[in-house]
Image (cartoon, rainbow, N blue to C red; front, side):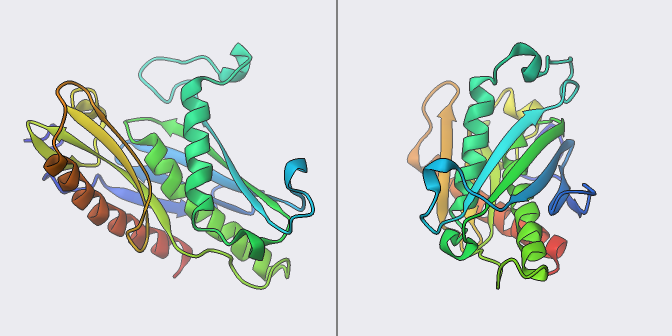
Length: 238
């Protein structure tokens, strides 16, 4: 039995509330169980210097955890003068995941930055950030269409992410902190709406896991992402 009482293939409760940030071109608050992430998309009419005159847009992300997102207060990274390696790795993952489903040529030379701020952390924050960031990005693109900045939303598919793990030798979906801290293996799967792989991060915490266990996690992840894509569609009115 999982600590939460959920079945092995059950997601935590998921909700996506849009329009959270008054000034952002697209925003949402995604809740996955007790994990909550605020995602806001900001549009700029220029691209970084290394991309100028290429006719391509740019989508990037920043990620952070508020000081009391966890059980004990963490210092603001700005106060320490630098981002942690974990923060840099996660925000690069978010950016890569979103760019995988964006037609950057159709964007034109503009930048959309996704700010993903963790309000409450109970595991799976990077997965929630990716899933919520897609919603904020979709809303920002729609804002551009509505204001005649672009002709159509330049997204080729949905993208969402979910964690899986091995506990008691069995594959389980969407780990919370109690499970994540004691799992025999854990993995994060980033998948498109069509079920194609964008990125997989998988680690054995003790003994190696088998190919069959990995494939069992992948099967759970496909079902989990399908459910998250349905939530995304509901949030943006598709």
